[in-house]
Length: 117
Image (cartoon, rainbow, N blue to C red; front, side, top):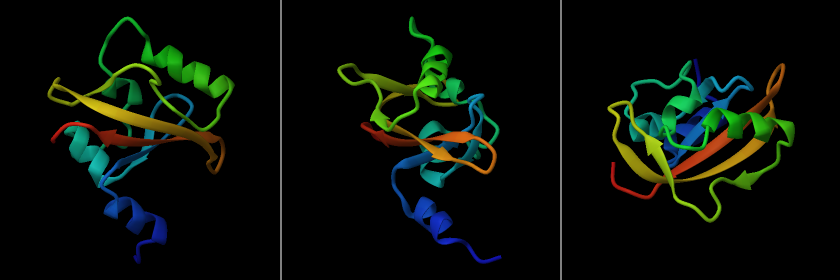
């Protein structure tokens, strides 16, 4: 099967790219995202598992975004960390944007690591 242009784009990108459904389940992820977070594959993982447990509920933030989905950077004015599968944390920048999936609105996420892998 020949790869689509989008698949080639995602595989070539050094930034992590995710598509997340309204329930927070990752439906697609590029190799850079998998490497950043230390997973062999992120499909089927809840995106909340990639955020450290702190005083702010990632699930609540995600649900609030779905009420008014618009393109925006996340964490403006504060530091964000990602949570790897092994439990270690690393500094990240994230941009999120809604887009139409086949049956529902999905959330696109681009993740840039600000630290070394």
